[in-house]
Image 1: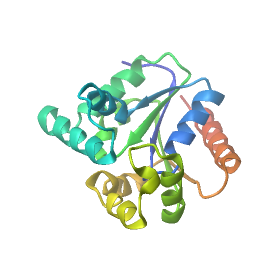
Image 2: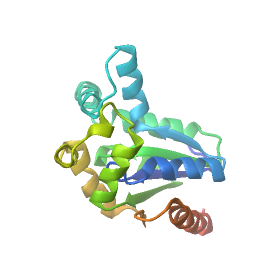
Image 3: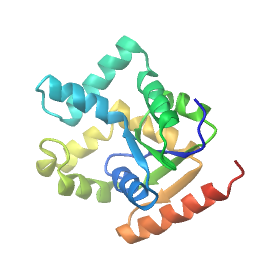
Image 4: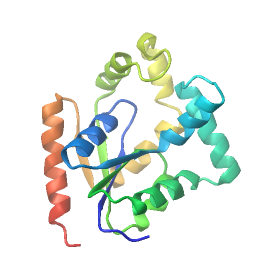
Length: 189
């Protein structure tokens, strides 16, 4: 499965800016994005179930319990290894098992995108990505932040090779991403 592209895994809590970072890298560096949530969203759509955060968490749990905790990690690693893009982005890493297979790829680099809790709450409401996000209360947001899938992010994030603080505007985020990509490109192959 070896390839010569840069594989960037992005980890971060709800609304930290993972998707924004992934889209920027895709556009600027002609990358390809693979998301852990895509498979789950596809299953929910096929079953005509709403794509709520709760349903995404439940389908993820069911699939992992049935087919193994590393099910999605194996899928992402195969997708990344087969990618012909110069930069491949893996968005939505949440568990140690998510990086188990990716870490075996020599061109894999893990980046944490971090943002303050209040900033992330405002972003959730503003982007309205999942059903009922716009009406979400602070208490609901805090409860979702304590879900297993979010708590495990906090154990992975400190192990990232790079951390980007994302509490300012997009331009500041983009500059930080460019600096990280430049560092990755300067590493010996």
